[in-house]
Length: 465
Image (cartoon, rainbow, N blue to C red):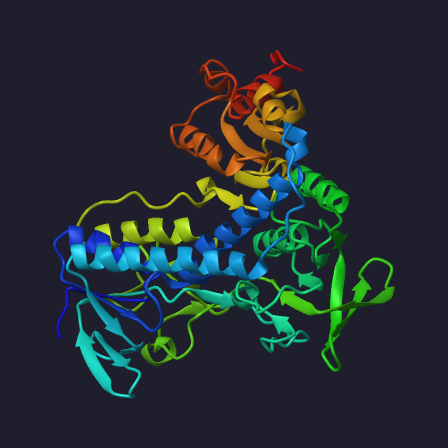
């Protein structure tokens, strides 16, 4: 069967590419070996947020008296939380199926592999191979949990994020290896419903090490207070799964001291590895760098007609990044003139509690880039809306270029900040200055006022501090 475009993978990169291509008049086929929507909709972004919402509601109920509500002692139904999460994921996957039917996109079930002459060979469940051709092929096979050499994932005692969403029963204790977004989100979920959690992070900064240092420190204080043990600048030396539980040997990288931690389950959350094996990359001579496919600003590989987007190319392994790359890639294929991606204006969101959101330069990165900067911070303790909501933890931090007022970056930790960060993304896209933010009237009372207040703080004009 011949297509104008074949997409391998139906995650947030693949399915968006397919739909945009169909909108532009192309005949599109999508190869998918599992469920439509990829990891994001089925085992990542969406179902994890469902679990986190269950934990948040449970936390609200436990603190109902703080809001003047009397209620009996609640009990976490772990199985019910997992079932709700899976139901949400199934609904989203069906939604992609609907969109494919609406846009007349052909779904090709099986494992796809690039072959010569713009052909994709697809092996279905029965082992039958069928070949499909197209002048343009987008590889969007996504990523998987990165395996550490001394932390073998067995799916029973040592698990990845996928298994963490579907355990048959709640563990009493857990060691989370890695303090990035995946690690801290699962730590919050399990800790909130009663699991004893220890987080081990290799990097010195500790929690969310890619975020601004002030965000990391704030989350560390909140997690320690909530009962989560955090071990930064610590390496995992070995995991012993003999016997009933696990024994994790860790070493403090500063002192060299080792310690053994006993737990029921080890969650390996040490990052994402690209799914580039067995899809014809090597056979076609497609260039890679440290396992990632090399592309230009329009996601063209060195082989004509072959493109790559999402977690298999360099850049942030984020769903919204893959979707944006997909649209740019397809519009270029269609003969349009899309603007290349500005990777310094990509928002990052972590959905633990409190939430974390950021975009642009951290304070350290701005200084290292040679900027003279103005920094403003506004704590949610000074926010009327935060006080009324009982959500006073956290702050908004903004960074401006002192010379021209350029909005260099913003870093937030607090309730619903993942809904607030888009204001800064748009402001930076439109080259807004600090004073323009200050003079833009924000509604009161809202959490978003903190962005205006933080900007005012940077210029010594803040009113409510």
